[in-house]
Image: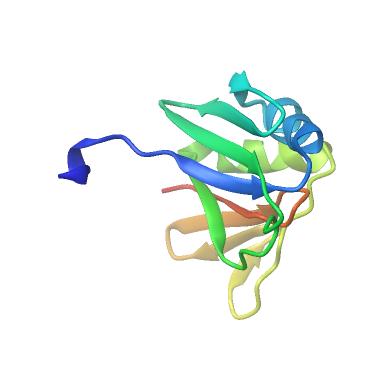
Length: 122
């Protein structure tokens, strides 16, 4: 039933103005529509809905992932140049900020509310 219908990621934030700066300006996602409570962003063929909530930043797991393929290293460098810091998790090998496990490579970083965002080469 739902397997044939497109879904959207949804993220809670505490401040929509700050979220717009991070997602639209820093990450360069296009704003599709916005009001004072909700913003919809375009990311490839998908959309991300960002909304104001008192529960913002309470998720301690991955909230959003992008499969960026071979562009991973370049995107990480671009984000680092914009001041994005990356999470480092123990028990995993790393090449700089990029975690490595066989052919898999990935990084994690947080938005201003602490939502965990993930980039992977797969």
